[in-house]
Length: 91
Image 1 (cartoon, rainbow, N blue to C red):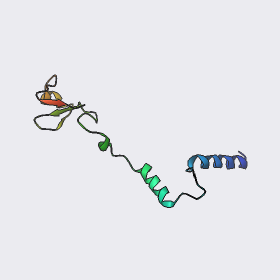
Image 2: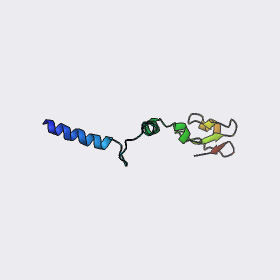
Image 3: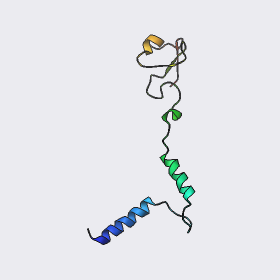
Image 4: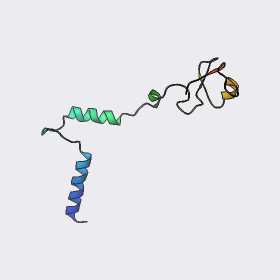
């Protein structure tokens, strides 16, 4: 490629990747830092997930133990089919 082509590609990349400035002054360092922290902070998957079954389980809570019942213990804990007398359906 010609050197001019590299300059055009670099300018296009900067325009796509750089934040848009609505004013003539540059973005303050604090704003840029908080923006980066907002979008680089990992989201806790447990915070979005609530109740039995939200992470792939069968969705039943044992009335005996008060805990979510897994696929392995579903029939022994809740019956086959799961009984509302022994477990509560959540999802």
